[in-house]
Image (cartoon, rainbow, N blue to C red; front, side):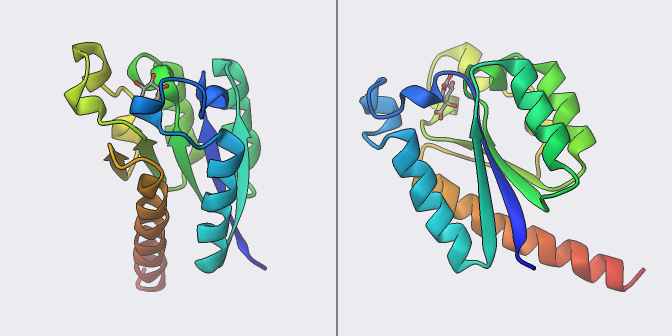
Length: 154
Ligand code: DQA
C-alpha cells in the first residue's frame, strides 16, 4: 500500500494566484496541489491535501490524519507566527513535518521572521516558491528512511 502524505495549508492560501503574486506567485492552490501531488506520486506517495482558514479545522485535520499518513508538509500562513495550538498539534501528530513558505519570511516584516511551529518540524524551506514543496518531499524521503533504519537497529 502506498504511503500517504498530508499537505496542509492555512489561512488565506485559498487565495493563491490572486493574492500578492509578488510574494506568493501566480499558481492557484488547486494548481499547486496538483503539481505537489505529481511530485509525491513520483516518490511513491499519495498526497492528501487540505486547506482551511480556521485554526481548529487545521488541528482537527492533523488529528484525523495522524493514523493514516506517514508525514506532513505544512504551510500554515500567518498562523505559523502565532499558533502555539498548532505547534502542539504538530508535536502530537508524531510524524515528520516539513514547514514550507512560498516567500522568504526571514527577509520580510519582523513578525514574519518568527515561526512558533518550527520546533515541531524536522526542517523548513522558504523563499523558493512552489519548488519548496518538492524539496520538502525529498526531505521527507530522507527523514522517513532514516527513521526506518533506526527502527530496524533498535
Ligand atoms: C506564507 C508566509 C506567511 O507569513 C503568510 O502569512 C502567508 C504565506 C508563505 O507561504 O510565504 O499566508 O506562509
